[in-house]
Length: 263
Image: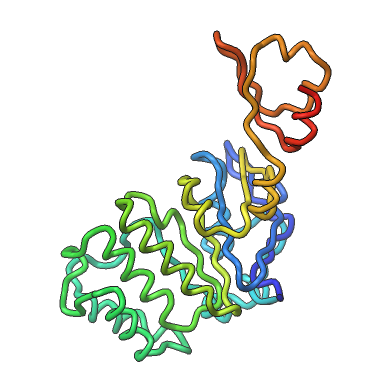
């Protein structure tokens, strides 16, 4: 499979925050979950990929094209779903579509109408009349109707009820029946990653902590809990993010088999 999104040594400096040499890649046919605490740099990274912010260093390529030098062509290949509604509330679904469609060279009305029917969206309804979940579905319909190769989503399931979240995740899985596409989405709901993500990239304080397959994480990482007396044994360096309490300790390990042997 070819790489659809490649971020290499991406850097962005603000007065009180720096994105430091961010690097990761996503191959076609897969979903990557982008996670991290608030303020870690997730939205900044997405804005840099979309060229909504000017980077201070590094490169970003979509389908092998530089996102700055080939901005129009790159954005033609991206379907972007915001974490909230940015469309005009007073316009109908159909009016909004007629404004947006001309921006894309491969806009497909047949495909758009297919998604309207699939998502049960009434083209005559105003945006303000749509629920949070229906607004998300409309954004997804717009993002998918110009044959986008890369779908970028910023907290797509935030604020959705469990049923709507599950439905949205099922839609994402259906999209990847086309091996030519890739999905990159940020989230803080880790249970969503369990359901659909193939890869996970974790960012904290502007730096990539890990970027690997979900399968590798499940096979090697684990939560370790025990009595404080265990902390006096050799091997404590294998524990990450150690927290002690009155009952004992809790920590993370990235080599659960080794920790089992040590403790």
